[in-house]
Length: 219
Image (cartoon, rainbow, N blue to C red; front, side, top):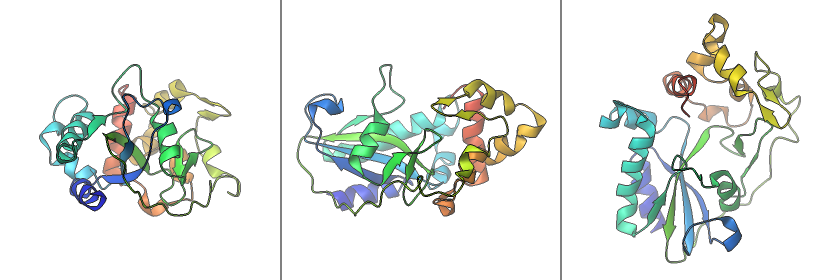
């Protein structure tokens, strides 16, 4: 079943990013036996989104994600949850750490994957009423403590990333300036400064898509 699911997701540029058997404290609705996390790695999804009818109109990525994931999940009888549904919002970041020990918190507040770095995004969760054996590789732990100089923390031109706080207004305002066009067109400089998983970094068109949505007040 897992290989069939992975193939169905891969046909749309999506990936299976782990799973777990939920406990009451995980905040998973209902009483599923298994939660599976779906997301993207790098820019694999972007060509599919650009070719989809959802590319026109508001919230194209959310609408495309819902359609595609529901279609892939239907043969499994899986219920679907999405991080953009709410409030209240589901604790997707906590689920990711639970689902795959290769995720951990980064100094930027984003999740970092020990292989893919900051270039993954959580798109959906699938809930199954039966247990699934998931292959798990040995986690090496967060790469951040051993990172020399932590360049992500000094790369932001407006110092938007402070200990325990993200200055969203300063970040968004910078994107409208001439000096902010590098971030606007190529993606967040702080994110790009991370040395982990650089081969999975978003391409410029994909990065600019997200930055336009962020500047407009979206995700």
